[in-house]
Amino acid sequence: MRKNKLREMISQQQAIVCGWLSIPSAYLAEGAGHQGYDCVTVDLQHGMLGFEAAVHMLQAISSTPAVPIVRSPSNEAEGIMHLLDAGAYGVICPMVSTKEDAAALVSACRYAPVGTRSFGPARGKLYGGDDYFKHANDEILTIPMIETAEGLANIDDILAVPGIDMIYIGPNDLALALGETPGAENGPGKTTAAISHILERATAAGVPVGIFCSNATLAKQRIDEGFALVTPGNDFALATQAMSVAVAQSRSIDT
Ligand code: 3PY
Ligand code: MG
View 1 (cartoon, protein in one colour):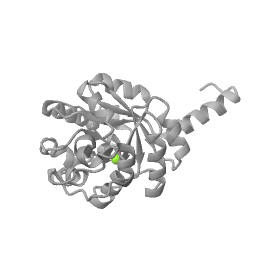
View 2 (cartoon, helix red, strand yellow):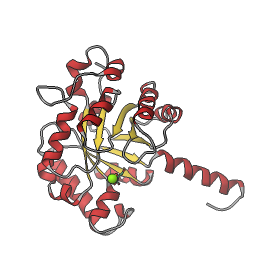
View 3 (cartoon, helix red, strand yellow):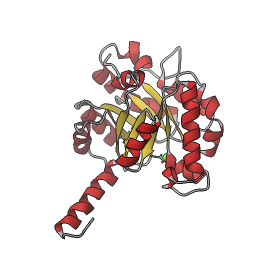
């Protein structure tokens, strides 16, 4: 089976830079995969796309050096298994709040005897190779998101669930859960303290941590703080920011 490059990067403590796609375009997914990202995530939770678009985008990413991963819409087993069958090499799952949630996620991502993933690897096998079934449990990354007050309170229990390869912080939902506003990810308040706490607990447990960042400057800061994976903004934000700069420069407005 094709190796999951992200596993090697984690073991060598190399920071992973992750692209994030919300626009249903295989063309853009292919372009993103050629920009130097280590992995590119197709976002089925908040992206403007569904399963069929995600399949085409995973195909496009597969033609590039980037590892294709997904954010699932939810922690629903059938949907997660379907995305793995479509060739995702990792699943970032939103709103994981308890050890039971985390165990259910691991189970959906692993074949028996470890888990309950149903057999039918489809595109996973085309991308991974004929021996996909034999090695899938060892290559696919299972990544619960910590972004609720309950998830924060239960962080040690979640980290102790066997099969968790990484956790991923959603700073905007975390801010909301803590009574702050989205965007408080690097401010003086509770969200920043919670992010530091999660990083500290996960590091103590030997679990790498990823985080969504609103921009590349913050992503660089997060790498320096010890995060294993950073997402420096999504496709829509990056594209529209570049457009507004182009318009402003065309009109010679200072940006
Ligand atoms: C959050 O910040 O809540 C996220 O889920 C980032 O995508
Ligand atoms: Mg979120």
